[in-house]
Image (cartoon, rainbow, N blue to C red; front, side):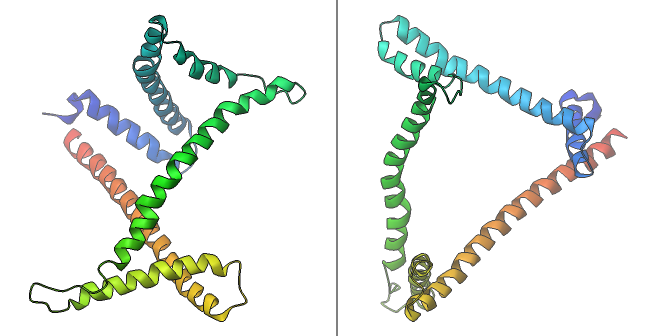
Length: 214
């Protein structure tokens, strides 16, 4: 079957080329594709939020659940004009401040337990690994030692930024700085590689579509 008989594939091909045209310079075709993406995304999520949040909340309020009016009033506060001379204009910051405070208070213990505490624990236990015969596994043991050095030196790097008059702290902090840079570089390389894979996939899609279409 000719690929151009498939309207969805044809639309994807045209929009992909339109988006790639933005690599050269901003043009009406690229701006149209960008606006179409934003508009479709906004419309899709507006419908999802209406049927999953607004409509059930409206039914709950009609059913006598008046607590639902509290987030409604908080949302209406966001529409207060930002007039610095009016005293009531500061009320528009209350919903955002409440969300930030509550989210921070809930997530800090969770993130500390799930990431920092578990990272330190997994770096130390087990410090020395053995196989079934009781022999030491050099690769796993070396990995545990390197993990301890990385975590400890990375934490010392944060301390060395404020206390730079101790040679031991400075030396350990420089080691930690190296591991931090390696981690950042690895994350950047992984992100770049994943984007290149997506880009190559789109180029392959354009080439295959052009071959089948013509």
